[in-house]
Image 1 (cartoon, rainbow, N blue to C red):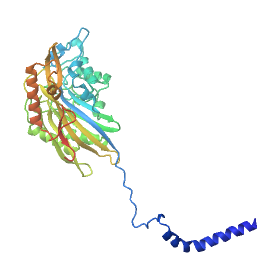
Image 2 (cartoon, rainbow, N blue to C red; image 1 turned 60 degrees about the vertical axis):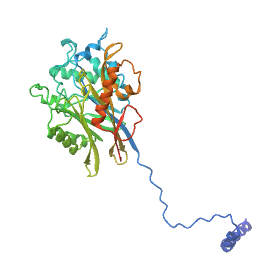
Image 3 (spheres, rainbow, N blue to C red; image 1 turned 90 degrees about the horizontal axis):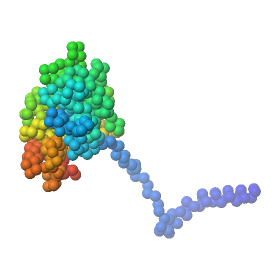
Image 4 (cartoon, helix red, strand yellow; image 1 turned 180 degrees about the vertical axis):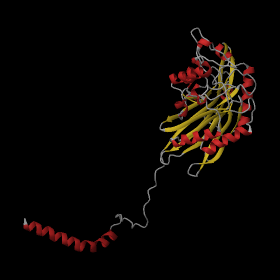
Length: 408
């Protein structure tokens, strides 16, 4: 055993002594030996891209329920408004969050269903909206008290039963204080809503909190409250402006800018019943960095029985966002819109349908349309795209018009 140890030790010492002297000659004589180069600089591994969450928000304008709409929705067993929204349901439901202005109330059948000027609509109307994919309905508008405080309360009860979020009106003071916050895969989206008034009506004494009436100071505070509660995106719906005017008033623009300055990311206008222009607005984030906000002065009617030019035309506004999950910064990435036109007649009889105009124009055989209908749809497309503008590019959806792209 001792002999083995001595031989091994001797071999080791010899190797350490003579091998370094032999190595240069061996390396020169051997052409296929790979020699690792000396490090001349620190090796840097690029950091992988930040993880992001992309999501889309869709918004439409006034969801009216004039009596002719209710009449044609009557069935043998009740009411069915599904055909009205069937042509656009796929685009509504495809969004991560879909918002509309619910400009009617559901006070129940006992007092009768009515249209303008004092609305009361069957529950089936809201059911069809939920089925079409609407997630949030705003109630702050001039018809929210058409059937008084009880009509308002029952409307919100019905929406709760359908699992639809609502904002702009409340049944209790505690509910009025809450910020309505939708969760889209961990992204928190606050939706606020306010109206200029209620057609001369008012909430019961001591309950002014039932409807959010425009007050710049209170609105600014609410936007800031939403941010403080962790909102990644703040959307403010404002029901004001001059009916049937295609351009915003100075008062509209001033209030919208105040919301952006307060921290709102999106301002949605309603009430004029016609489309008014939209724009992106440069603003500052809370940390002083720049951000892009978006304002549409009026989304116009989405569905109604108003048949005049411009009033029978609306749009599906499509907003694309990206939240950086490392920095928690949410950025507007793109804006597009789908012009729609309300058709109130089909070959099988009278019905109300919201039609994506691009689909109609692309299909000469689109069912239920007369040549006169197609002419009106073409005019509505031209009116809308000329008024709102578009990017010089095309969309993957032939019925959608690109308006804004980040970095363009």
